[in-house]
Length: 455
Image (cartoon, rainbow, N blue to C red; front, side):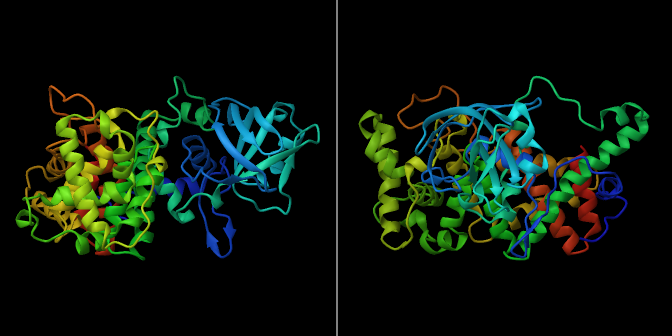
């Protein structure tokens, strides 16, 4: 990526970090010719949020493993997750701590094999096993099983960091732990510190933009935007599931199987977004789950809506030859009703329906271009218009219900709230269009995006 212009995003923070002694974990190690830059913090989030296929897990030595509890997130010294609980073949129910690393070799490199505080570790969770052994040893010389997550994360490793843009949610800390930079920062003048923080903020967006540039080398802008928005709809509980659904139902599938003239469909007029919703909910296995599990408890209005979706899905299913996901693939427990997967799928159905031909990317680019012509305050207009694009969606059913079978809401609820719309802007729209601007040497667009980010 070319050096940013002065009025755009600054690369100064990356230069500062490069010239400063590293205090973090090793990243970017090379395996099989592919550089996989995944930090230990990301691996911790994957483990804690169970962002991988948990249906058939095996340790590196071949023992069947089930996760009862990933443990409590430890923000102090010692193992990464405390009081975890697993079912391990040959050992039964096991309670203990979990230590997480990017590579198996980090266990010994960090000296955990000789530390008393790691005696109670019952599982070593890693992304890759880069050593010949299938286990590690604690201070007592006992063999500890290892779980290599790379075998169970179902998307390419280079896309894993993009799943977890909201790392601040892991965990919700009541207090911070001072890091190695704390003392140096305390001696820094306020003006210098403000400049460093501004540049650090720029670097956060630039790092995301670099990742989007890699995506754009392989896929068109519209598909990249679609997959990224789907991940953003998953929050931390269902990011992987939304990513799988986006891979399962491509934009090409939607354009191929959704009728172009849905308002004159045989039988009854049906809005296009309902067709899109039926295909996403059907391919995600959610419709089958509703029909099998909860149909008897639904109200008349809910039954009518589910029946309509199911009828449309059955018509599409006859022509669509892929294997759908299952209802149980999704995480339902611990997800607020407002954030349940069907409501986010409903939101995506509206976004997709209104941009299925021209594309959501073109819609957003048109918004930005129109705001650029507003010389008075283009940055704040961009921010407001894009927020409205995502948070102004309304659905005939999901605006009034949080879950199937639930009570009708007295006041309609947004499909995408203002806070989530702002996160989507920061984590998806801004870095994607920054990558687009730099590919096209559009310095003016970058400047507008930078001002929108600063505001």
